Length: 100
Image 1 (cartoon, rainbow, N blue to C red):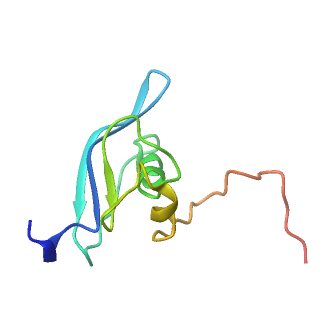
Image 2 (tube, helix red, strand yellow):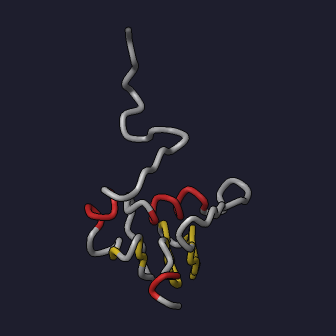
């Protein structure tokens, strides 16, 4: 790949396990600048886990991740400053409520 075509998002053999269950197993993906890419599948297929891994919210058990040339495994804070991630459900503070 030439420098001009270097992927904005790249993961190779990405694996994440929860106990004995592999949520993501040996996923490889490369997205070019400006490319739109989606993950489609049933509940439990690993879509949310993939997004958390790519956003550096979670670390992989195996495989490198590069976002805009930054190593997401060794430099997650730098990657988080370059990525926007809005989960469908906010899972950190389930007991909080909003009031006007």
